[in-house]
Length: 342
Image (tube, rainbow, N blue to C red; front, top):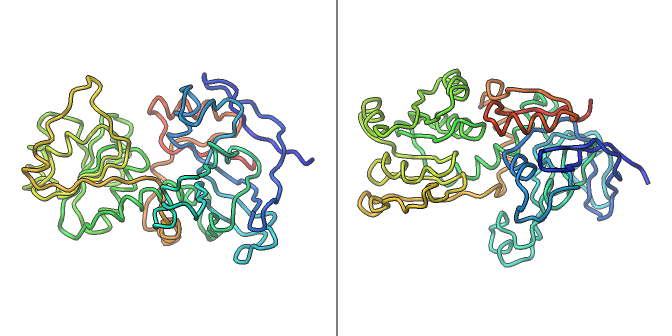
């Protein structure tokens, strides 16, 4: 049996060990084996590696990671549109395509979904296995550090597709993490006036470097927006979580709110006043992972429509994965690149 190196989670401190594990093999006709070039750390990786008791069971002994760029080294006999040597990005969510939800067109809510880096081995390893329909070629002219944004950008594109932003409208993005700043740039490309809300100084500096006005959370946020724009926000995007009450307050009449990050009750458990949803005729929409938006994300990356370099804060080796997790958890790290190929 051929072996490979992988970072295996060994406890929730977190601690990863670089171990020899079996290299994935072609099993199904549409399987693809690819050598991982680089990966990046997602907030999901942080949660799964530092908090026991996830809904996916005990994560100890698993290989995390799902934001990757890889090069195909082997293909199954039924693979038609990919070849050895192609550089790919991967949708990490493997759909069954036959459950009622998949057949209704909502594959991102598949009832039998397998998740790379969670329920099946992930990208913090030398090689990964995926299926042809989940692998997307990306130009080798694109810097690897830009290509690795394909998976989170695909998630943002899925949420953004639920909005209808036009030139001259106003948009507030809550949270200046990587996905929040991708949302902000997408809205600006549509001609909207965009502002961000973020409490952490390091992230504020990055957002300002990208040209966005940034406000810290404050009771008078609505008044600050009116002073900036002369009106409130036609669109609010919650890329931070728990911002629905604030978004309801600062949204303009007949405004739209997108809940991208997980919405929970405030930490004190009190229900917020959601009466303005009716009184202001607001529309609230949700967004969940990727829904056939990877091709669009690849196009955005290949055309250089979004700036990624300011969002990258650290570059680490696979052996330093735990350090990267801690940097993300502390908020010091934004997009953290993991050099897997060496």
